[in-house]
Image (cartoon, rainbow, N blue to C red; front, top):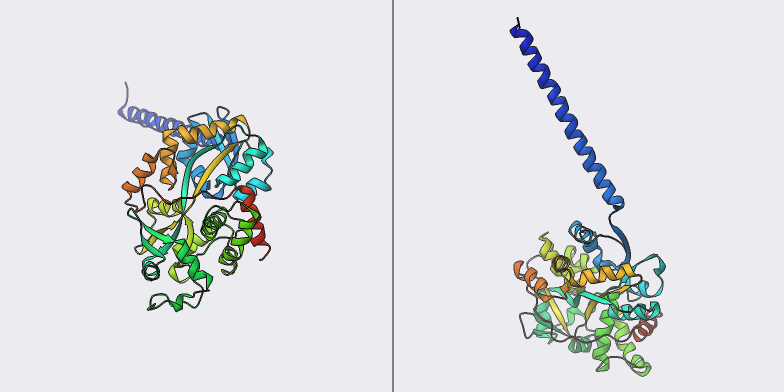
Length: 372
């Protein structure tokens, strides 16, 4: 005869054992997931590891989990190290890498020649812009430096700007200036031309205007260097990475950096993030003329070609690049991002010029560096 008490005890024991078994199964599952995750981080045997050296502006893109997963779906694990574009072209030990990905076409051109690469890839670009504030726009509009462009954007007239800098104009000398009466020269804040690609792009813009065309001879270099060199030297201390002055623009505001040279992608990226760092009154000006920072990948080994082909042709990676503010090979991706987030940037930047050759840029940069 089965006693009720014994039956209840057996039921309770079954429940206890079932609970233990379930806990064990869950624990095994968690351990498996953790081990698998660590294995993936360490490098899955199913993925081909491809190493690259890149301009620092793209580091957040390659570090993004969505980008890593997109590459993994094509059998690649892409690992990158950041470096300045000038460093990539001159001093980085490239034998360690499958591809180099500087932020400028001249640096890529030099790399392609030096390494004998059969081709290059230019999956995305970003025009150089001047990030500023509405009160500064009003002041410079009155001085003829800022005007309305052909689209929904405003133009920064580089020729007029050079006229003001040539005579050492200070902010507090501008008529009726009650918004920013600072006792310092009216200058765009840039990075150090000895280190940074964005400073080299600024040199390309200003030298074009000072020369009346692309600088392409030693005589033209000698002509423009006194004009453009002071644009860097009179700033005083300059930072080595474009992130530095742009972060000052975001955090310190108009007092420290009323005008800062930046990549359009930096501004768009912050708007897309929605982290409130872009506040009302912050705006972009498009230099006339400007240059495109063409992020150009140079394959150093066959695996590097795979990365270049994917970045150029894979829709998922193109869409992801646009969310970081880059103008992609297919313009639909960038257009969709800026429309979705109501970013007031032009669909097409019209007044774009080419930078000088790598050799010409290097000679001018070295000449300016000697004056520091």
